[in-house]
Length: 451
Ligand code: GLN
Image 1 (spheres, rainbow, N blue to C red):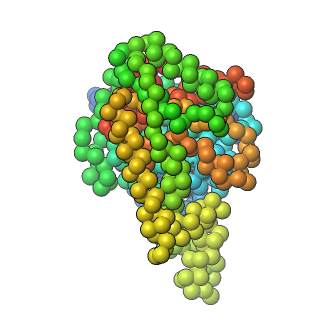
Image 2: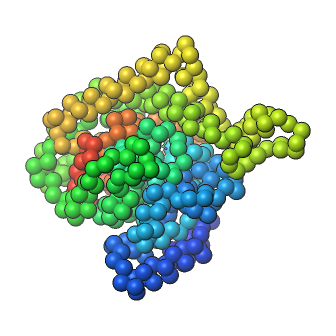
């Protein structure tokens, strides 16, 4: 059914970079055989899924949306990929993303943008626009994303779907192509809160292959998604994530959702997080610093593309030419900013200050979570903008993640849930729920109350 839908609509949506029909059918047959043999597979056995093309899957082309990985087939699978397969989930293919997950619209993909199924002239969010668009276009019931600054939650928000960034360390980064390692976190995307929670439970949990993986029980996300009981829950509305720059329809639907939660028995208070206004600036120093280091591995020797390798050039020339040809503009911009921010003489002024701001943001959360159980805000200040509208202005593009970045900085759990359509344009609005580290279940509890 889903392969058929991909055939029908993906020429217009372009959610997938690679559809693995043969592999998916073979996986489905293997699931049948396992079930026939009496193996206990969880509730998602046989359910198809769209995998962001940032996750290694053994033998399947993996590009990270970049020319520089053209032709590369990983020799191993990411822990998340392996857990999906072990649970009997069928991987339909790899979804489009901004190059190396850098962007908010998929327009930075080297293979062309994805279109928002709600309006094909609009962006599906990014970087995981392919995963969320696949859900919104009924090309898959489940998808996987990664969230460094909002790449699960912002696409979920603008496509009217569910996306959750687990607590940092709650899901394994092993085998996920790195963008900024202290921020990156894989997570579930789905059409319903319960589906997302079931998927979360499959992929989460300790992995010795990832040194930042947390060795603690997975929070009871499925029970929370089934319950949706918010009676007595203290919900803090973040004062700083509203006002100027927020679309009226976004604020309206967000306010209505808060009122609904109050009606359902939650206690609503306004909370101030005074340092959130500095999150975007600090993120755009810390993230590129880590990018410049992580992307040093694309040296023309180890993976994919190798430019001008005609035997007349030195290894360094081949490396420089390959990186010049293989990386897109946004990737180069970030490598240059990061290299500069980390260079001696500037390190303390830029990277050092940004790390201090990161600490202050985490302190804002700590103080807030002494008063309330969760914090809420819109997921993104506007609904889906038009393709091309922000490509010439990186700062306008970066503003898409104003609401989502604080949770990456602090490493806590955060999700986006649909809360209606903005009256002015009829496009989906997302409701963000942020919870303390390892309290991911609270995110689902509130999400389920809104469904
Ligand atoms: N849009 C943000 C960025 O460009 C977030 C990306 C992400 O979460 N991978 O960095």
